[in-house]
Image (tube, rainbow, N blue to C red; front, side):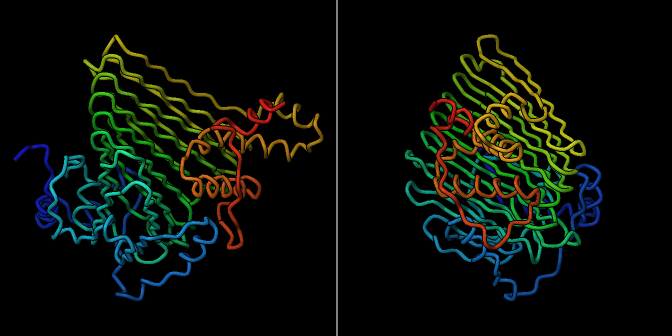
Length: 422
């Protein structure tokens, strides 16, 4: 068998063996993971089928204008309305052989493999969006989501993550594996909403030859979010775009790290991060790009942009690159500042108040990323939620919020679009 094939049953057995030997007991893993990732993990005992019902499903369907066809509660209970596209396994029954994106050398992966109760295996099809809600307002078990994209026409997965309603609850623990196979096209949209608990997430993505993978992440909820991503353009002419939009408010904490790799010739990796920090929020963003030797004619780009609205907010952005091939295009930049006074003056001279101008500029700043989401419902609901968070400086989304239709001027920011129409 190819060494690059991952048999999940064996992987879980390895993790459980580590656990039984005392090298990876739950407490041991919790202690080590706390030191490495600075968070505490706790597994709550299951309450059986009582956790299946959650009023938040209907609430967020109304807010987002999206019908969820896969609903997962606490990493344990799954309601699946798309059996042809989504399969639900227990770890012991999952033996689909795939490319190896994770192994147990990472203790986070070992923890998820050893203690998760469900594996969600998704094979999206063109024209049939898979809309997933992960509701962690109840029991909390690690969850594995495995995405295998083979459709030549665009397929879409939309995922909503809801953290616990109380900061007494441990964080949601989520692991994503994404494979964009040869000639496929996939858009994966993730929205972090929810309450006062946190989310710890790890993502591994692999783009095969002539494939295109777009990952759009909206961070608007959770008291803290820690995410580590590694995304590889692994074969010739693969293209990867990752866009992160962060609306920090109140005392939220974000720790986001991404590694992008151009592994073969004529590949593209583009990372774009937009952050607005308000209140006492804190954001650390570390983006690293690697262009490997032999990846000629490749393109790698990192952009990090930030707006600091309040003096009590903190924003730390660190781009870095390792370029090992001379025949390539690579660049990175990072900047943060208060809102541009010239843009404020431009809008105030047209009759807006300072508060209105600041709000519109902030939406325009976000729309350069959000406006590139191709799923219209998700695009509109994302900017509507960001609109609320920016105006109220509060990440607790109310029940009455409704999605708004927005015009994004073909992906330009709102302010640039307005100027372009004059």
